[in-house]
Image (cartoon, rainbow, N blue to C red; front, top):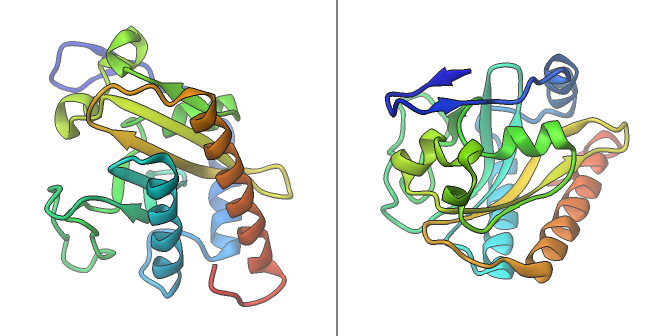
Length: 194
């Protein structure tokens, strides 16, 4: 349990699969390094944003040390900036996030989708640093589970205002995560764009 200057406790779920996931991500060539797949993952994040009508969406891989947004959709000038020598930002946002920030680590621990229409309605989630630091108020995410059963990361949509994602949103994010997991599986069989 940690606190991030807000005086509120932050409970991040234990990640028993971190080393297995990290090894799998490295084997698939997915991780925090610039390569040609940024364009493909960014295009997928753009599609997630369009389908969910969300201002922010991500394809997020989580290794032993941090979260990495391989795909990122954000409005221009959303803040953050680019760190020299690091992966390129998109919409002004950096592509890295601490492991205990946000809601994707909870999706991985649960291994199922998470819908938070207003994160402030849930004491467990309201104290997360992304609420005050980035203005996150609602979240919709689903795990990326590959053919070996490893949860590699998430596909998620985020908004700065509370919103009702509904069954349609939940269904859509699950379908999108399944589709992307299938594309990622293809990385082992051929050198495709994913």
